[in-house]
Image 1 (cartoon, rainbow, N blue to C red):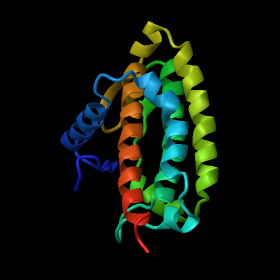
Image 2 (tube, rainbow, N blue to C red; image 1 turned 45 degrees about the vertical axis):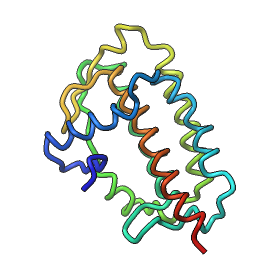
Image 3 (cartoon, helix red, strand yellow; image 1 turned 60 degrees about the vertical axis):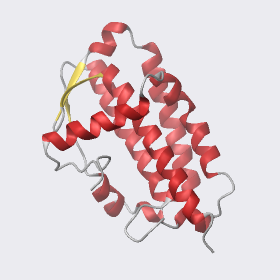
Length: 182
């Protein structure tokens, strides 16, 4: 299992390794810049792919680009909700979720890639409005994640930026396989 796998039932050490790895992808880049650029970066990453290529996984049991897009849209919905809870409430609980169960049970493979990108982009604009208005004190406010413990708004901003970079890398990898396949 990859360190970038993030099941909700993972042990605390797995969750910590995931967070460290994702934040490592971000490095010293400005998280707000990464978050703001993601909708355009996603559009570029999938430009020129056919519907069949978007739906073809790189290997059996792996996610297609379409599934990744559906995941990103739902992840943005969850992230926006978590950030709003932290901004508006004192130490709210932040529920984890199993991304693979969401992909399966919410039928990501049947989703429309263009619609997922549109949904992601609209939600990201709302996320950026919230983050752009956040004060330094707001960024220090915390919620309590069910698997990872205390997470500040500033930490979530960095984590979601790293998550963006993780999935851009994944899309590039899948694209290299499916674009070359006959």
